[in-house]
Length: 387
Image (cartoon, rainbow, N blue to C red):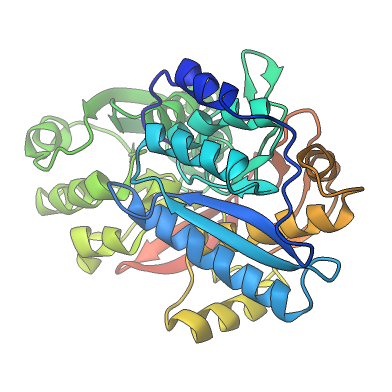
């Protein structure tokens, strides 16, 4: 996930230079501090709130089981207000004042990237469960030494959905509608179009909108009578839900495909159940994935704690917290550098979103994507995405 990334590098470094580095961050002798830096209010609060619920469940389980090597985990939680600048400020506070050992979050790529200069400066790892932008962990061919993630990248999602469209839906033509104000949407669209073309398909046209738009009838009317097999609609649930609703109202019946930005209960509220048929999106997790042995226990525990079924962001938050705890437990000492080395050497971590290793060359997980199909607004099918 990503939102517009303002040029915050110089500001981030400025803040960091006010503080020392080293990341020696345990709490008291009986506890370990982990920072939680998430979007708990603002435009993408649904992603941050869902991620934090998963994190808090994971840490509750870890502490109940005795903690990490006998030390209880203490979460220090802040709200970025969905603003990259606030994420930078809070990351600096977590590392230099609260003295956390690592920081989990933010959820969106723009805010997460805004914290990376601070992490590198202070030698404290930062890790996101949902920052999918290509340049999160490797930028300009250079590895971001203290940045990690537990989700796959945008190119992976776009490629996976192009494969699904061509091979599973037998599509030979597609129309792309993308959020032109979002790097996330543009990245998915570019990778989808490239792969779809490589497979012999044709993108017959593109339309664009910007975040905050609510009336898409002009766009949809222009494409209504064109000939295409599927619509590829990478974007966030706020606009996507309205586009799907208005498309179905205009009689556009072709399958609508997208990315993990679809994954929010708000999508159903905005689109309505009757519009959410023949809708497919790539995601990191599905409760229908019966091949995952960790899934049942997580689903039961989450439902018991929160009274609702978990979604992908809950699962990614949970896996990210468990991975951080696992790395801290394997670290040679309680320093940011040691935790970073442990994270980079992770192999065959068994999580709710699948078993994965961390690629030491990219700090990305090596894992599979899923394609979820909706019927009347409810998950009805899930398939592992072919790459």
